[in-house]
Image: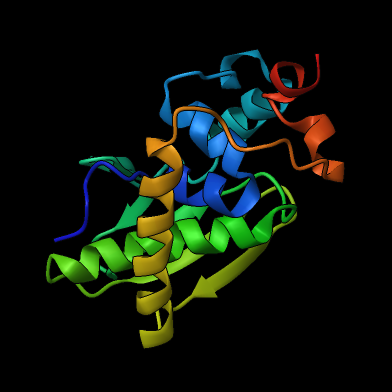
Length: 164
């Protein structure tokens, strides 16, 4: 059974920035101050209105479920940081597989009218095991990891925390 303490957001943050992961995991949340996060929420709320939204299972928060088709969707604002979107969705596929449910995954980018089908491979399952181990080690640290100085840091909701 997968660890219900690790969330999809933590998986995404792991691929973006270990410091962001650590801060978020310590309940230091800055997303409420970000215009970009707010825009993402609006896009999510106004997309796919006829379908069932947000399923929450022990920290696994799926944006959209098509139960009859056996498909889960993650709705994202843009393709920037796409690798984090992919691993977040692969983690959800992994989680469901661990509890005996085989499903498909799709990342939806409604703003640019694109969809990406995501599959979970045996190699991914092995990699997720390592990611979960790394996340637990990062979260258990007493101090945050160092600042990474990436171009996307300027748009991060934790920017002021790291640079001011």
